[in-house]
Image (spheres, rainbow, N blue to C red):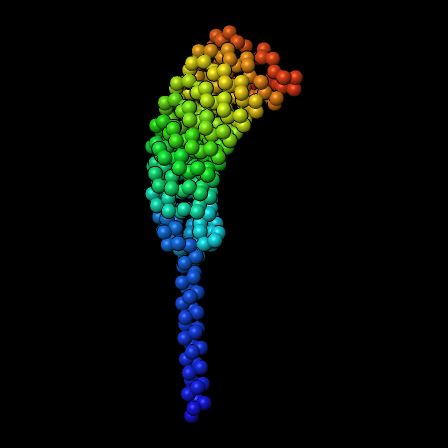
Length: 304
């Protein structure tokens, strides 16, 4: 009788152990990332019509099984949903993904403004939003995202001025805001982005002059300012861009290109400028270093 009771107790303990273990596994399944991060992803799915995505998420699966999501150390660190038919605005709660390092939403149909909450992503290194239908202004506090290395939002409908806080992005290597509706001048603060290799603001409504602080960008390889309303002189500080390989300034309102004669590059220089605008300086006569060459390039909409 005593042995029977002991055996029954063992069975009860085994059953309880199994139940608690199962409960732990269930809780672990749903606690693989913080609840606020999961909620932010669910908000993104709903806000951009996830049921119409090309590759949809199964909410019954664990988050690390969702298409385009990378989880590391129980946090979402990467979202890559390029070409996935996202349609609609980005949710404000996207700023809850505090450990996110890469956000790639290119080639979709995202609308609305870039949410202010995105500036809370202080671990973000790559932000790619190009080829969407985003409008509104750039967030004023974009400079909070100090880890950004790449910020590309070309071919949208973004308007307003380039925020001066852009100068706080001292790790930035690529800034491409081309083909939007930005106006105002290029802020001198851009000269603080000393790691920049690519700066593109082609096809906007920018005016003013090229800031002299551009000369601080010693690593710059591509400077694309074409199709704006930029005027004044080319600043003499352009001579400090020793690594420049692409320089495109055509279809603007420059008063003088005279300081271009001080340009000194060791590499091939691809250049576009207003060839028939009455400038005294013919850039093809520039005396580049022995190994240097100059190549004119043309855009498809250039009639020349």
